Image (cartoon, rainbow, N blue to C red; front, side):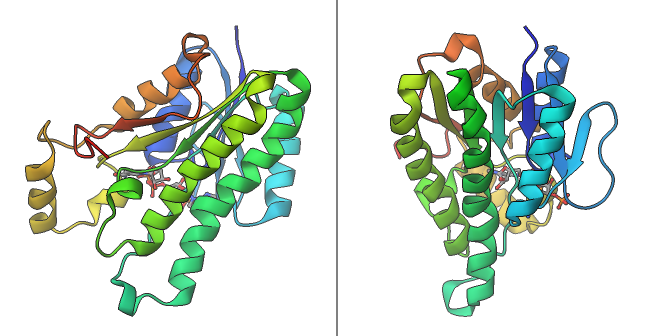
Length: 234
Ligand code: NDP
């Protein structure tokens, strides 16, 4: 059965792989994009998750074109890495506003219709560093850890309506976000990953699609790592 899927930040990277994965399974998929061109072959809507009215307008368009959102993937995210003593308050609040408050904005908007439908799937894309911590990423790790508390609280609020809220926590994934790392830092990271390589975006997408599937109907409030073993034990 085709579902109405919305992926935020789905014009590139992990979000695009997630969107293509749902589309290839026959779902109706829209991605949000903020800058650049929308990807071909998918529904698209311009949206900035830091702006509530932009989020509202995006949902209205999606509802008109493919019906109320039944599967929401809150994927949009940014980094502003630097050590805490050098981190401006703007660097901190920008990352929280996009990664955490942005996820709150889209989840809250999607939930209205999911509650009425007595079904829905919400998946938040967190990160291994949310629970492990990461020097130079106080803002980012805080935002990604915040998603865990948010998903678990939401899971408790809406479980009785057959709506699930889960976290997928990727480790290091080949994408624009990790392309900026120095060769030295890259080698250091690889030496700490039991599987000895980065993930492909498709490997993250497969897990996201599973947790949003009927097979995972009894999984909620879970933090599912896709990190090659990097975060084991946290
Ligand atoms: P990219 O930088 O490749 O893509 C980020 C996406 O988020 C882009 O589509 C971007 O849009 C969008 N975005 C950023 N800010 C906003 C905003 N204010 N409103 C709407 N959209 C926005 O990142 P990845 O694909 O690597 O990461 C995707 C998610 O996965 C992020 O949440 C990231 O934190 C998480 N993650 C990534 C890992 C990795 O190794 N890459 C590891 C663990 C987690 P635009 O094109 O307009 O900039």
